[in-house]
Image (tube, rainbow, N blue to C red):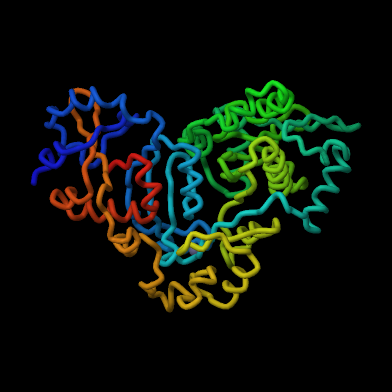
Length: 441
Ligand SMILES: [Zn+2]
């Protein structure tokens, strides 16, 4: 079967992607006969469906944590458009984003184990080191300010003014200057405005006004106004900016999602290192989750990122309790005490879920144990062998860019390697989530 034959049996396509031609685009470039159909039906599709492009398993690269050359292996997608709901589903399967790239580490075949961790903020109790940090801030800026949960905060102590503001993720020279100094001083790394912008300013997340009902209720207009002040664009990506005496000193990049705030990155002016901005910003982000929960009850968790055993820079992620870790085989969140015990018992990548006890570890002496491997090792099995109705979308380069859907089962007739990549992507994303998204090859 030819590609155009396979494509002629397709359901209606969504609106076209915003940029870049796909790998298969060149093969499709002479096929313009479906363009009119595509044009006619494109408005029938949900306009806000998430759209990602498969980039597949990447060649091994240097590990960002232990610095092993070729130590890290990951699966990657490029996100052209991502709903907050889709991204919530992805990070609950171990994915993280960097700019508009989504990556899932091959935990069973990388030097370090990256375990996603989250804090149950409603029951949060600050530990002794957090209390020390807060005492330092209270002494410097005044107790009223620091104990106030408000994220949008201005306070003036006798000596200095502190202002914390949630802003859009737009680029500014002021933000870049802080980032450049941070990279140069803390990481001994050069950067450019373009790299800064693509890493920390661009976000594929589509802002979503969760809690519209709340906003429309007259009797709680004060609360609604407050929510609007906190999240002017609804759910989505933001910069939480810290100003001291009018100067920007730190920026926390955060994603506000239906059930959590996910911390993307923090950069700060190294001249203010004595303030422990990393710890303080995490506490403010936890406070923001608790505050948002009052208006959007589903928001309960704080996701600080990956816990990496043995990496002193990353073990602090487990510090804010009570916390849970994600079991990367069953995708269930498990109380962290059990997980840390398992990690202590097994030096290799392991499971935490009590229901998976018989499997124990996933990797032994460098070998992945196939009966407990991550989903993308055995994609068909992970999908229960049910690939009926699974569709990938092919970019057709006609007079205008159009995309056409293709059943995965038909894709095999075109290219078994594309079929394999498609199945891997579906297994890594999960069948239900993948069916709700447009996946381009
Ligand atoms: Zn490593």
